[in-house]
Image 1 (tube, rainbow, N blue to C red):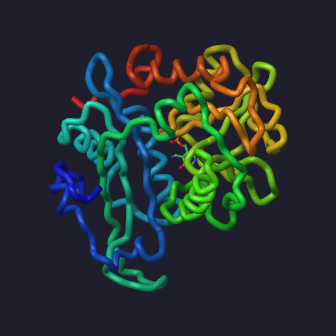
Image 2 (cartoon, helix red, strand yellow; image 1 turned 180 degrees about the vertical axis):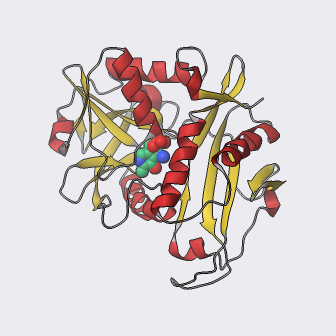
Length: 305
Ligand code: PMP
């Protein structure tokens, strides 16, 4: 990943990819206190466009606020940094990674002289959970790891350290032959995937867990809007895993995962055992929107040129 051509936006300047380095005593590397985003840009008929840039940047600033980190750039500068990272690398479509982290000015939990740095990298990244799985659906298992409790580490923040829990769950699932993990909250209710929100379909309605132990996903919000426009009711509530076993359909949402159908949970086939009809409809609408094939939400697309 580090050894390639291209440019990375680093503290206000575009630097050669291989030079975008930091010291081994970087504070965030030791304690995990940092925040980041995952953003995608898609090829559209009018050129490359970033999907819901403003919402991602807002969540980045909110995450920083939750961790009490001050981003030394304005919202507009961070928006422009993401546009520049896509444009200057001449990417037709891209995954972008803005990250805010503490420098190496001090060590120890009490360090109080730390500089806050910001990078934005951008590269080409295809379907996160596999192109075939966008139709076939994925197999997932309930994790033996519990999702964060709001007083342990806060899910409203997309914080670097939160992803230890995600990685443990994902590694366990992959080791056991599954595509992804489903994490439950501390009380045993369904929370989310290692990097995705989850939806289930019951009798034509969409149900999804509340946000107490799940990230406030931007794809999740997009699905709310698309469902609303189709006249489909969306219910946010506590869900149990046995409810998911008997759901008509289920799918994950995320910037990386987009809309990925789930065909099996814990060895139980969900619905028809592949992508369900409502999942297919929402997935195809989602792709139409991100790729600029529809113009009813122009506010969702920021063109890079
Ligand atoms: N939950 C977690 C833990 C995630 O990492 C992500 C990906 N950012 C999501 C949910 C989905 O969020 P979004 O749709 O904003 O990408």
